[in-house]
Image (cartoon, rainbow, N blue to C red; front, top):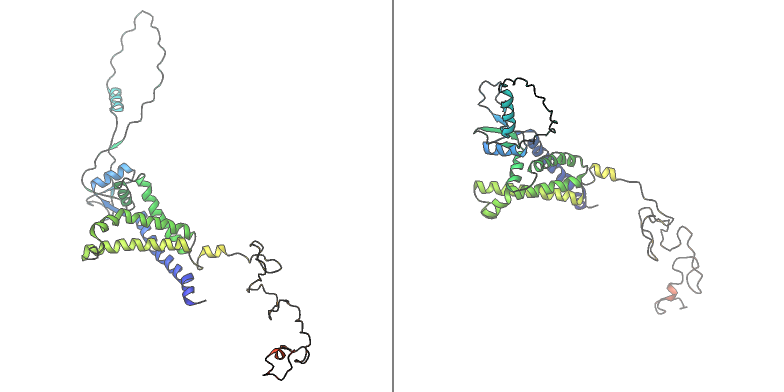
Length: 323
């Protein structure tokens, strides 16, 4: 095997998986286990989406610089429960003296379950708030009007972290390669596509801000192409997928053809790789001894290879008499 073929089959897929694993494991870990700061408006929207938001205090009187206290969820409810609580707290007026007239008992009214009050998150006061870094993806998806932005952010973060780890091992590589390729395409759409198109491909490579955008968009595109390459071509032989797919040699018939393969065309013969049957001289007789040619009059002795050939040559250049 040539080195170019060996590199394309073994080296390139392995290096692609290592790069993808290093990039996505670290990115997914930061999204799942690290916290980022948000302003009051972003924190309010995250509370509405169902995220857990913590407020960063002035850090006065706290044990460490990284300690935070949870923000209170301010919820507005219907006034009916509050009115009922106020009525129950009011003093009960004295009961009227019983009269002599008989009192007809009325049937009790059926029990009625009060409706669940609607919850509306009020704007949080100005300050600094913290939440998991993956909720930045939720805000991006929500700004584009995507449904289920909360679960989309969790799906993207888990896909990056778990998919990077599985690519490092080479297990389920095609599935996670496709998932990471879709994640990178979504990231380009949400973060860098509009600024890059607005700036222009040539202007984006100028200046500090332009180079930052240029590097970001092509880093995302490069990682997406590598992930799709693993999904389309496989992880290579140095992977668990390749080891699990290794099978025993397929059963062959008497002629050396796989039993589950299509029947060979008429006149076809089995190729190498252990399917020959000792027919080294290619005379079509297999392992049987070669049949010597018949003796020829005036030619070479019988049994010698090429007997009678010289007799068939040009009679001018040969001392043999033509047959």
